[in-house]
Image (cartoon, rainbow, N blue to C red; front, side, top):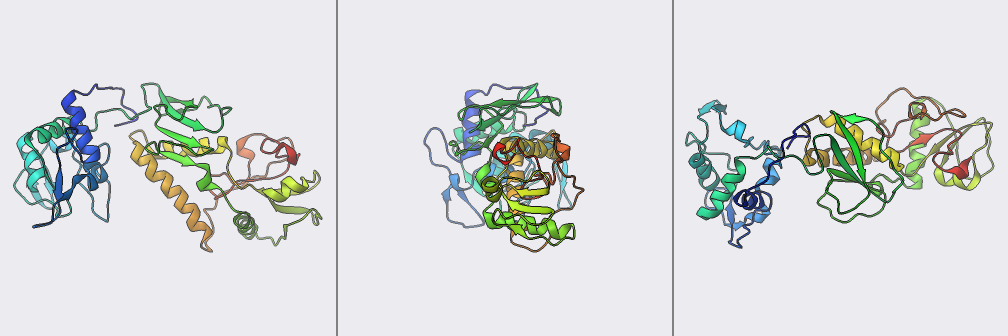
Length: 350
């Protein structure tokens, strides 16, 4: 499932049934599928440990509890390999069926005890093997040969730039039910199956805004009082978004404002940044993991005294509009900062 892949495959009925088993651990026929972990373990529903949980949507494997599941794409299984100093031959269909049900590799070596053993009927096993034969060769949802579709909920005015991600343009879709790779939620979203970056998870409280301002002031080696009312004193002013909205921004001072939440433009910039960092083979699962890390990094910064990543800053001066002139890009700090003339964010601040 590669962003770079142009091939779109239509699944056969057997492959669709096998995909359902791989993703959900359940048979479309209604037949029970059970799993056991370890020798003599008690059988339980395979829906608790579907294949996708460890091997990922693309079959390449994701580290889970310090265990690295095997790459089970046809390319990986179809060649001889050395595993834990032991050589195993390429997997045949019967080898793979034995691995799934009995826990032995193609050389009859025992697989990791962390891998469940699945009890499948002949029909369900055949369907699953049919799907595994094409695992990793399907395009990701919302990805076509020339575009990556990103859903945007809560801001119909947001438009994408002409920037391309590995040769594909960004296509924004303002529909919660659309087939998209990922989505931006400026308001609550339904359909949690779609990878989502939610503005609420990146919204700062007033105290968090103040702490971000204090940390920035420490970073540039200045002592500054954060304005809490409209009696502005000093040549430089640090204030929260609430104070800036209530009091306005003096035109003759250097003003730094901590905004509570990113704009939809900034949210889109985060999405583009993540896609560029993940690379051309990124999957929805990769994107979900990257979003979680970004949010956790923000939370970690808020609960420690360590400084956020350092990088050069520039202040937005009067009349400046380009993103390069915005102080502290959102990808680096947990909150957005701007200086004077922030009318493109809140016209009431002008």
